[in-house]
Amino acid sequence: MAKSLDISGLDVYYGSFLAVQDVSMTIEPNAVTALIGPSGCGKTTVLRALNRMHEVTFGARVEGKVLLEGEDIYAPTIPAVRVRRTIGMVSQKPNPFPTMSIYDNVAAGLRLTDRRNRSGWGDAVERSLRRANLWEEVKDRLAKPGTSLSGGQQQRLCIARAIAVEPQVLLMDEPCSALDPVSTLAIEQLITDLKRRYTIVIVTHNMQQAARVSDRTAFFTVAGNGHPGRLIELADTAQIFSQPTDKKTEDYITGRFG
Image (cartoon, rainbow, N blue to C red):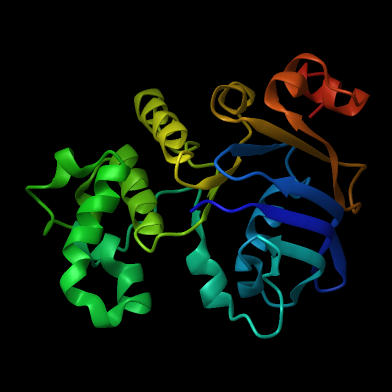
């Protein structure tokens, strides 16, 4: 079941550097929320903070709260691995595990989280590949390396891997930036299909893509070099692109800066 994320007063640091300051927003369930803004404004930093992936960077820390259906994902009693199972992530560049087959790529998360139910892995792999609209293309070559697939297929394989462990939230960091237009369209259609089951947050530099796939859009910007990124405006996508309330948002959307 998809769940909401409530972010309150989020500050993200890398060492002593404050990268993102005072972000407060609600990510609604069964919807696509796009994070847009110029390079360096903290979009990906916020995304990674939503499932504690920023913690893999030495010296990174957060202040504030991120609540998943009211539960603080940064509570001392909640391990990061549990958070990352509940809040999955797909990276910018397709990254199937190079030494693993298509089947093993999808089953990788199950090996960590569902070791005692090996008999159910096959069903879970097929279900995930079907949800990623990839099953018909790979069902006869599951033993082939994941890297033998095309770029667009590899990205859908990574999405299948992320959803195999049944997360409630799916984070996507520029999932189409390395893909051709045909593969991009396939991923965008998949995102629209997946929101019926998951809460989705996508970072994109492509304004047209944000307008096509998202229900809500959050605009971030930065005041200048050395300043932290800030959330300027969050609203329904149609409003952001037609009647933004903040001049900074309007200037970015219309190409006046950024």
